[in-house]
Image 1 (cartoon, rainbow, N blue to C red):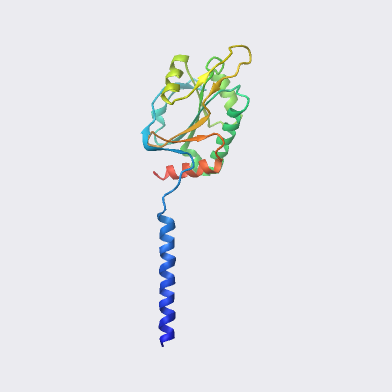
Image 2 (cartoon, rainbow, N blue to C red):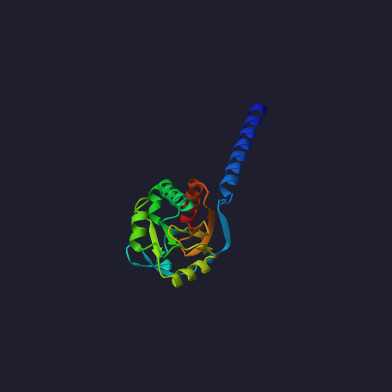
Length: 199
């Protein structure tokens, strides 16, 4: 009898320990992979033109997650690599990709016309949005997001020096995260899924 009671007690303790361990795991807060902005700050709004010549206002994207990158179409390295990475993020997200907007803001408005952006982005993902505008309009956006942009030598085939970070804006229009461009696509996708839960 005592042996039976002892076994029952041990079983109950083991069950409680399992429940407690599961509660600890599920109660653990999610750890984001990018540089978290705390508290979340409203993303500076702006209005530019997309690759189809249509007006684009950032605040109109509320309800979607925005992954924004500053680059240009003749960039030899980091820009195509980052866009390929963001294409993979959308693939990793599956159906959740419909709730994500990938936005490329040009740092080279002199060459990146709407047509140039359209042709370039179609090679990555037709859902990607390319934005351009006047030097004055874009300069305001650069300064609002702390983006460095410079053309050291204005000559044929020139390159543009620029900040190479990915900015994440949540569905409420808040700037939540930034990533270095070498962050794994799976990590970004995981963070986006968490943001889609409203966290």
